[in-house]
Length: 346
Image (cartoon, rainbow, N blue to C red):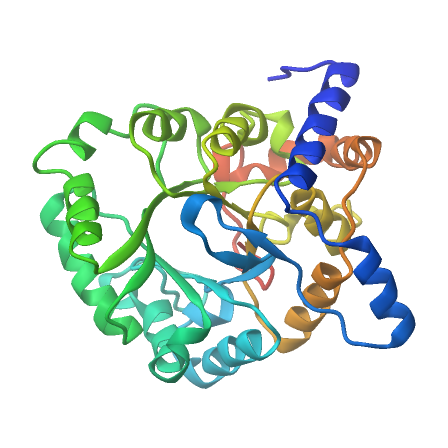
């Protein structure tokens, strides 16, 4: 689906970039230059998280990859601690996340990521904005997830509780979500009782049902798939992002390197291009999964040195990935899920 010609696309991107700057989301380039000349270590740029009053770093931890792997507790704890040490203050996890090698099948895996994150939260909870999710669409199921998430994360309060993985193709019964038996009732009750502070939704399959939800309820945040291949099929950037900006929501980007597929086929683009593309959009932060500390250090350096791309630079990156977009859009159902779930995978 192509909603824009090259010229109108360029103007569309220019407006988005201008919006990023106008909303106070762009780093101060003067500070960047002065730090680089004085030798003072760069700090992770901060952006407002919608209407919440919170500020988050433009680069954050998606607690998958090593952090959700069974049997890798020590490595997971080391990654989470290192993230916080380096200035990351937003961590995203889920009641669903859990892996055993390359498989995520089995109830015994559920909550693995939360439990690993919780081992750090029991001593460093005040240092991060903590987000998790429920994948159950029923009131009772969502409340059970909330109880287990609080226990797993070793906290009394979750900063952001989200409905996980809103799907398209008629797979979502939105009326049920908002019914007396639906999960929305659980989210609202938990917020009213102070157990969670803010509410949100997430999805990577189809922007249309997500937009319907955002139009129907004043969610505080939205987590959506945003990368350079997005425009080539059912685009979130065009169908959902402008609405989220208009409503001043906290906006989180995921699938930045499309589970590393964006580096395949001879290296379509670099991690710097992948991250810079999405961070040039009017988003609050991006989340990326980490396998090794070296990946974290590389990505943090990119984020600290980030300068917004021009519309022409963004168009050039979009053109680079166009021949491979079906391979990259696996999470929208255009190809199979990858056999291996590697490091920069969210």
